[in-house]
Image 1 (cartoon, rainbow, N blue to C red):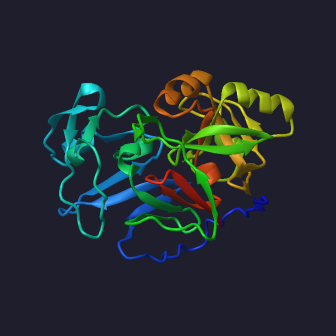
Image 2 (image 1 turned 60 degrees about the horizontal axis):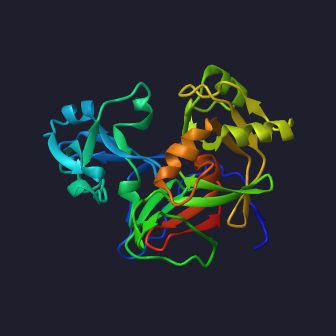
Length: 313
């Protein structure tokens, strides 16, 4: 397919309600700087705000479990590790939540990290997205869960990689390929990739946006090669408060034949992806493709079929 130039979405445009098929569920989400939160309400009227992240884990913060007066139980996670879990309270029917497909539908309890508030009351990660079909419409700021697989007549289909053992899938972190600066990189498909900007970062971007926003990630060795090869590409040093890392503005990223950009990437030390994240994936990955790139597209992720359909907005 010939590359397609994609215009930057206008965030001021009012969201449109998507056309739903029988069995589809339009989830109660809020998109904030291309990061997606599920906004729930219990039958008692209490708010629960969960960060959705295809490249993340699964948990509810301990102080939220205490606020909601949830009973903490013991369970066994993958690897026979003991874990404390809670079941969410009954939810208002106006804010449906697809059940967690692990731990009997319960959420592990986690202590809040110094930056935990950036991720809401908890996280719905790969163990929540697994085995289903979802559409992220960044332009219209909607997330839809489909009951059945849907076609890709208006877009381009790209394969997703998942680890398998003896023909059975054993992990649920998706791998996607993107071409950047003439090289095809294997990347984690990571809707939750987040940067927490420093004052230098905010000043460098100068767009009056929030400190918490979507990003993409690249290992430092590739990041520094880009920086050396392209001195005209904009770089902000010490841009990320979570790790003190720099960011670089890549003019164009090609995904499934679509050319999108500009896309901001945040550097991470090579072992973060080449060693740690790659152990959970089917191949070694150089980083993560997040909302700073996906924001230009409508993306339908079909986990059972291991494909993504990309439509230019």
